[in-house]
Length: 224
Image (cartoon, rainbow, N blue to C red):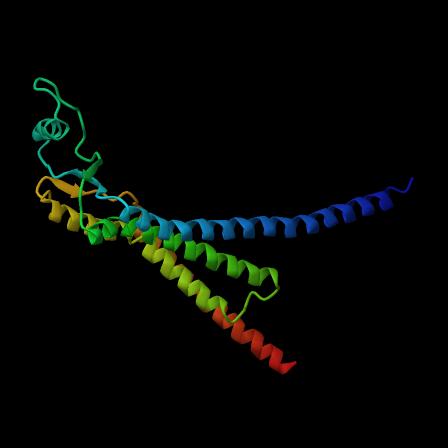
């Protein structure tokens, strides 16, 4: 029995299976990225439009209290629980704060952070999809890739600034409702801002790498 021939045929079959698996995996990843970009893009528009159909808005807030002894009384007043009872709630607890009526521009403003977050996710997914397509096409140093990575870095930075935007928009709506003294904004989307900014800087460095690689590729092609 020729074991060498069998081993060679088995190895060739394995390599063939691996080659057929890679395009399938790339198609799956590309499909997921395209779906993510579509869903997030629709959400970025649908969220503020839906809010405009409502008479008021809901904000994420926490109590503006630094004295723990006053926490129970403040929570009891907000929740309207009977005397002699209390809610054992930490100061950092987030509450949904409902405002029954607001002008249209404040209703729109209340959903600006969520819409901005969805928009950044949509743009980021689309840009990663385009970069992946360029690799699949055998053109990793496509002249458009540096610009794509730069915009991706911007999307990452803006997405991680959304909590600061939410603090500002919530404070504006609370000021209109006259509740700035007892309530503070509590962002619903929070993350390590420093690491996000570092990630953006790394992406900008990657964009410069793509740009340099593209120049080198064009120079080599010109010499051939």
